[in-house]
Image 1 (cartoon, rainbow, N blue to C red):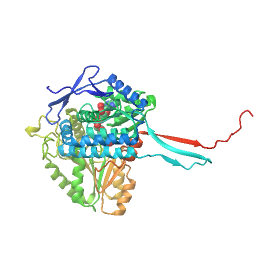
Image 2 (tube, protein in one colour; image 1 turned 90 degrees about the vertical axis):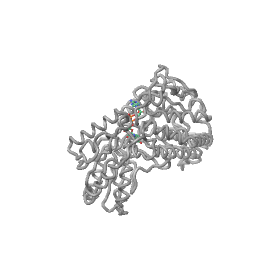
Image 3 (cartoon, rainbow, N blue to C red; image 1 turned 90 degrees about the horizontal axis):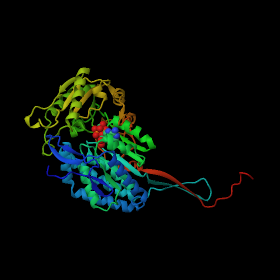
Image 4 (cartoon, rainbow, N blue to C red; image 1 turned 180 degrees about the horizontal axis):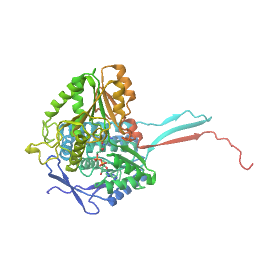
Length: 493
Ligand code: NAD
């Protein structure tokens, strides 16, 4: 390896792991080692939290003006914009996703930093109508403090940005830990931030496994909040760990998202969005629409058209223009998807297409899996209930609106769902009955900086993006000022 080992960024300087350990980062397209990074443990995380604590308590960030913080966030957005093509390439190399998707991610990332730069400048104080004469009552929002932030491998830089931008805008200091298998874009973002004038200790980036580095961020009394995006079981362990010092928690967990298609919808458009909803990033998206609910009368024709299109999806190197779907993230993750597919067959779902690895010689070194279609699925099947996180779609049929809503809501998750119909009254009725944090009407998988994102039920709690995303990183303080206090004589007279 000629490239230097990428280090952690703690208290304004680049540092190797205290243990001296490193980890190889693998390109999921061909299993080649693309980088070596420091592999931290609890001690590195504790060091970073101490630096963040010092920076927060010293006020070097929280007490500068919102305009000052906004300025730096806007500068960072500018640096990302200058480097967006390189960053997109890093992301595709590390995750296997297509370069087109990585480019979209970079545009989103830039707009999110700019959005929160604007919010940082706005004074969110609220004046309350006090019932006490000659008094003044104000509600102010203050930064929550030191934030541990733990992000997943599917959207490494985008998910890091959903956390970093609002936390920094609010005046918090942060220790961010990217997924240990996809840290490269977060490291590069940290390098860009280090070139700007963020005070030392405001942004700290630590690298390493969840069970040590991540667990320290969740457990340590030095952190006031932990924000986590990842799987449901990890989320539960973070909740337990965070209870040690009654830390605030924001959890963005998985999803098993229904996409309901009524017979009266624009079926050509619905088909395109169904495909996009399932197969972007090979289905490794928390909001992937992998539960397709089709109205009885259109079921067979829609399935035929879906299967025809799925069979033509071009698998390949995400960095090559023309590739439509890349590999899964790792051989372990592919094995998990394969177990789900075998389980679906055992449960009696009909495997219409895919269900195995591709045979093309040029894809054998990567972690590829073919687009897979199951029909005759029932809502009590594991393949329908559990998050597969791969290019696997299950189709259920329904008769009428009530059944569609019942099936869609029959899940422990509540992240997002879509519905397709041209009937305006039905659009309102069904959207109101769906128990998901986001409902798309005649669209799928759309999100943007200005609107909140997060889950109902076991998809987590707390919100990212939008004004709600900023508020997650604030404490609410009531400041009451009595301008004319009169003696109130009661005790010991
Ligand atoms: P994961 O839970 O395995 O890991 C996520 C992060 O948590 C990683 O950085 C990992 O190192 C860390 N981690 C693991 N164990 C930990 C522990 N015990 N303590 C602290 N940190 C720990 O998830 P993943 O496989 O990286 O990501 C896929 C999951 O993320 C899917 O379930 C997906 O739905 C979810 N996700 C949700 C959203 C959302 O917005 N709701 C967005 C993207 C991904």
